[in-house]
Image (cartoon, rainbow, N blue to C red; front, side, top):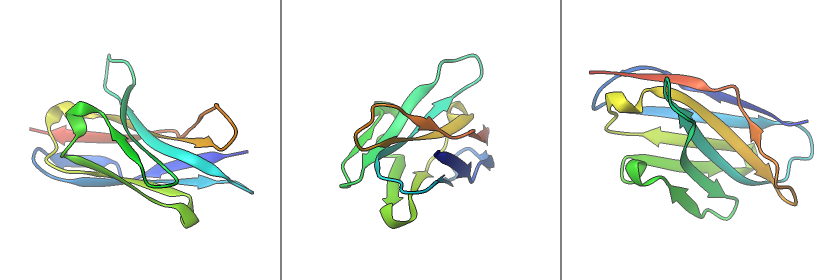
Length: 117
């Protein structure tokens, strides 16, 4: 069983920064990809960024240059550094993880980020 636990959400002013963390808990984890999605009120969940265990990254176009994903593989932890935040970045941010040899995704419970104007 894999559990993902996010932290770091909160209220931030526009133009500010926030760092989210997500740790994967479980035994014998063999994580390939870890990533972030977000869901704003009344909208569908959307892709933010992902990183594989080798360090290759993908970003949604609207986040490039503002958001930075990083990982500590030994700690089964992924981070999302969010800079130059805008009110439209307000959303619940979800972490996910995909294990080697599996197409399934594990999801965290989400952490709320609210950007005030």
